[in-house]
Image (cartoon, rainbow over all chains, first blue to last red; front, side, top):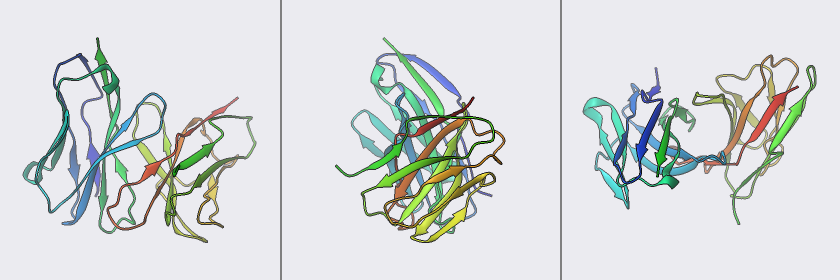
Length: 115
Length: 113
């Protein structure tokens, strides 16, 4: 079965704190793709990053970084020095190779960054 | 500007009515998708289409119907058979190549009154 689990329902931090959003996935496929999306209050989902199963290299983009570990089936997302504009719901998602490019989403983590 | 346009942004439906949600894209993407989002839950797939004139049921297709007569358009009809239609509906498109990211519209919030 293919599944994505985001155990943190809500996280509340004060501005400038670092915060990590957890994502654990399940798939039997050896080829798969992992994604993070941001959903601001306006509602649309904004693509943040894609990782394929053969590339475990961590990635950093400005204040955002992602840690992909196949050994623990995790794809965690860290925001450094959080800002109020980071407040949103963040979704982790999975595409497996036989899945017609259908995204399988976790339940999402609501992040509130307070000034 | 390339993107996905969903309309209307808010929609109210009376019990027993069918309503149609519009989704148009000008990204020249082959694949299009409809997702439903309920409060505190992730997105669940309703229908998807890989090419024109072809579409497949997703995980929660009951009570919904779609058509794909044009590459740019993928309208979703919420029928009276859908017992709990109040939700946020998101349309997405992707180039169709395996593993490529999907791009989303701004969503339609449907409420039954």
